[in-house]
Length: 69
Image (cartoon, rainbow, N blue to C red; front, side, top):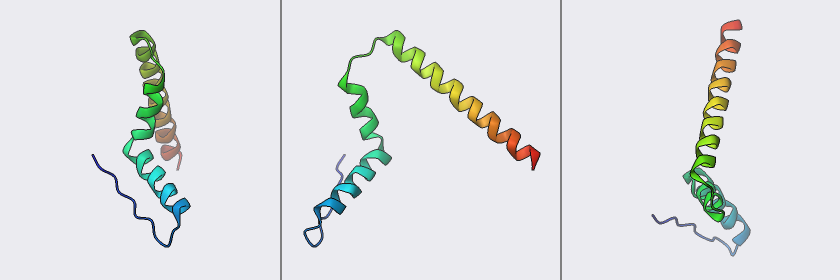
C-alpha cells in the first residue's frame, strides 16, 4: 500500500502532520507500536478480551443514555 503526501510551499511540518493523520486512520501506527515488542499469545488474548469488554460496556452505557432521553 502506498501513501502519498505532497509538500506545498516547502511546508514540511504540515505535510508530516497530514501523513501522521493518514497513518493513524489507516491503522499503521497501531500496528507499528504492536510490533515493537513481542507479546505472548496468552497476553494478546487477555488484551483482546479486555478490549471487547470495554467496547461492550461503552455500547451499553450509550444505549442507556439514549433511552433516558
